[in-house]
Image 1 (cartoon, rainbow, N blue to C red):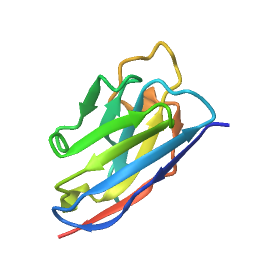
Image 2 (cartoon, rainbow, N blue to C red):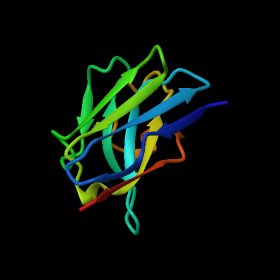
Image 3 (cartoon, helix red, strand yellow):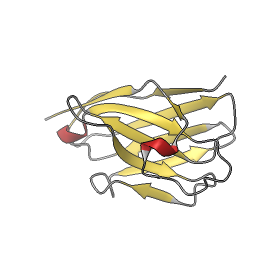
Length: 125
């Protein structure tokens, strides 16, 4: 049974940092990503990464502040978030794709087969 479990969310002041983790189990995952959803808004792309970690993509709003990475030995992906802003407040979701032919990390949510339940990140001003 595939399971993705996020951790590391919390409350932080603007300018602070958080590191999210996503522990995956039940299979080997090709591309992985992070998405977020703020209250009253649609889920949006944050970052994505291929299997080797050599290809990453970021939303313009987080580029230069967030870093996505993964440790395949631990079947875990990470999102290091620095210089956090109040507009980063959202529930952050981990996403994973097992399709071996889908090797380019996507910005589209429908490119991912599995999702975590989310972790809340709140940035106070």
